[in-house]
Image (cartoon, rainbow, N blue to C red):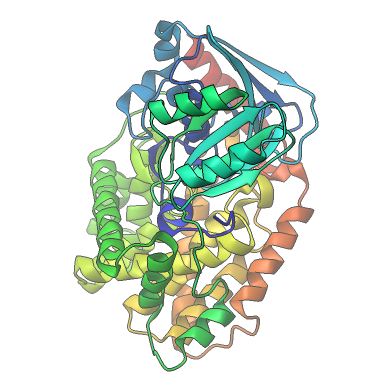
Length: 520
């Protein structure tokens, strides 16, 4: 089960969630759910540590990390309304919780270090938020791991050599991957757990010191021996020789292989996502309220001025801006949104697809095809770079969304596969170097404007590509360049709230006012 086989619905179009940030809220919730599962559903005490130089040290309260993590520890889903009152939920749970900002060795700005206790056991889990709600558990009780939450995980700690135990586990688990870890530990990646009787027999026959189980938390499972048809644009084009498939059809082929789903199942899943996106726009247009946010309702006056003819004539783009604004306001009010590809960049791609579809009078089926085409571009980005602003700046969020949207728009307009890839390449090129510097450490400003920027760029690049403009640099190479640029960015401009607009006088004043309001 490869750790580098992104899924459309795990890594790119999703999760469906509440919260300001997928890297913070969704990832934290999934880490919390894994921790709760590992502790057998019972946690009495938990110490949460964030590294002092990382992104979470400064943003865990304002960007929803605490909300997601506490919700996960309580067993709540990502769309649960109780997340809005997570503080009270944690207080009434009886769990003794502490959060500390400490110095410890780390390789990522998004590290969670949890020490968990109940009446029977004490365990430590270290995990990373890798972008777009995706996670990786790096270790449990000091044993190095790589757990993404895309299958059921069983961790077995034992005394002795473990050879016979490993052989027995291989026999008992069907189509599982049994891995020997450090001395005294075995990991089993499978589609299910053993029943209690089988576990009891193993404990009786082998010197097992600890048996831990972590449930799958991602929507699409990984399977042993999965072979992907392609992982780069170049490979995809080679695969498509003689097939003449459109980009959305290639996305179907990829996801069918990745998730072992039928084409109908993949299309239906994406169709359900389109329905959710439309619902987010509707809720946003009705008006949203939330105390801890910077911006009020803006989509309604935009619509009024658009209908009255008092705005510049931008055609399709005006409708796209309207839908982007509505979606971002739902996100900022902790409503249910689709992270596509992230929560902070949840509107550039969907707003482009829905706005263009409405302007062009396209049926829902064509919107679904547009989202599938965009998702294929996202697969390439997820495979060879990241969606995490904490690791590569906003170019990896709104920039990625823009590149994905450009490809979708070309397909929706009847363009060719080569034109879609050219549009995506040009669009992403134009967004390279974009930093992440959220005002008052909230995911609102300049996030709204950058989603609009991403969509405006996508519309322009779609037309440029269909007019025959030369992208010059192939998309594969642009993605690699984006990743290298992200690695060279100073940490201050990668979603830490320590640089750019985040540290302007006005930003600091807004932050102080919001904190005072929420504490009063």
